[in-house]
Image (tube, helix red, strand yellow):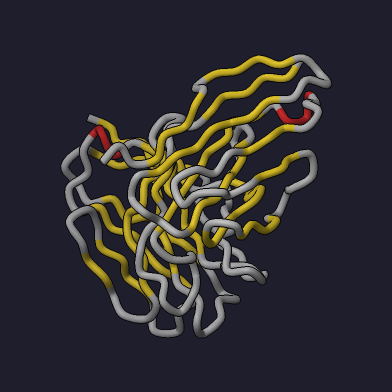
Length: 118
Length: 110
């Protein structure tokens, strides 16, 4: 298994441009999520999905859209990039929802996309 | 929200046990304690989690106090490859999501 694959690894955007960060997993995980990590800080949840066709907002959703048309893919779209969105973005998946009563599987993370908005 | 308190940094000698503390005095009865680590700028890696009982796996041991207000992650024989930022997470939020703090930067010294 490849696990969680994120593309691209690096990206530079100009203010106002849009782009899509790709995330794919081959573990048949129902739960997928997107985080951003700013220097010296922990991860903050942007959006998450508990299955195909189901998405919801996390802690910092503004400026980002997601969709989940298949179990495998969970792309993150930046609608109009801003310098405040310069960050490292991580995609993660797990078999069940973290913190739920039935949760017994860890989050698997991709290696991140490093985004710079100028 | 329940919050975790971790020391910002710790050192440990190679081959010794690394003991990473975490305070979570406002934890609720049904909230798990999770530990992840992040090496350099890679994606975080799951280590272990527990609710009440102590837990052990091939990577580490997790000791949770009886009142559940604190826990300790133990790496029994630290190696240089264990140098990383270690995150203790207990709050799952209103929608069952993990909420991350700044973690402890553990440096293993030869």
